[in-house]
Image 1 (tube, helix red, strand yellow):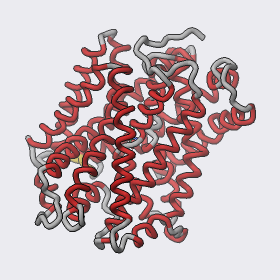
Image 2 (tube, rainbow, N blue to C red; image 1 turned 120 degrees about the vertical axis):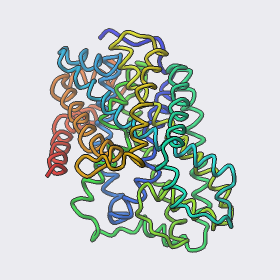
Image 3 (cartoon, rainbow, N blue to C red; image 1 turned 180 degrees about the vertical axis):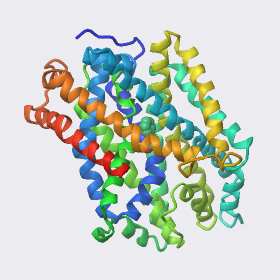
Length: 450
Ligand code: PHE
């Protein structure tokens, strides 16, 4: 197979893993995972989540990186090259559209994280401060100018990293941000677990309660695994194209998934014990992070410091995920138009300024504009995570399992026989990609629709 790699690639396997972990760890880990665990039977959900991630998600992640590294180039190009069929380029275009949709609301939340990081640095959430966090959040997010300015700032910070390129931008910042993120969340976790009354939060997270685990919980576990590992959005296809031929894709897929899951578990331990120690409602979604936690910080010893650490962590998690979404769109645009990285990134930033602003306004003046009962922001979130990512995942496994075939798959994961991967493991992974994953994804998609 000829190499179609661009010159600007990751310098090492660690660089690729750091960037992919950066993509995976995001808002999905920090607020979605903890409350889903709570709503769906605590440890029962965690066990099923772990099983699904190991059985289904890791092979899909691997399949994406196989397409990316073997095909090289942007997702559409990679799909076309590995299949030898032009029509498959559509799968890559779909990935670009998915990322554009996710990014449109992600930049809005990214802007909120900057605002809250600033508020916490201005010592607004110190112990003893009197705030009405719900009113504060509502007034800010429903405004017209201020949240848009923050989301444009967020776009600007992301675009700087993208313009610096794969090596100097994405790889370097990920290598710096990821260890920082782990340290921050562990520090907050220690503070949270040592609060009086924290035990109830740990129990809520880790006591298996199979009676609250329903069939919907199963769907939620799979959906969360997809979203959290950034599957079905061509992220790993894009990063795979920048991965050195010598790196072990199977091991990397496992490391990325384990890191993401481990981070989600620590995030749960950082948030839930504090929530329980102060007796507030744990299952609030986005409000948990921007409304409940600020209120808790004002009551907790070292609350001010914790608020700074927490919102900084949330910001890092949001930026590193946004970088990957931005890169999928930028590399696709570079390949479609033939324009340079800086020009393409600037065009993407302009598009996102418009779509992000509309999303932001849908929390305020445009909140009356709804599609099927959901405002624009929620609709984009719903459609991209429930339909587009699953369709993307399905196309990935069909491409590898049914079009590329086992020989090409094995050749790629062993880098032409130079990397040792046991025959049984390779066969098992391929079996999951070819038969199990498509059936599971298709069944889930149908069940979500019905
Ligand atoms: N995985 C990210 C999160 O947990 C979201 C994401 C999805 C990022 C798809 C890139 C692509 O927040």
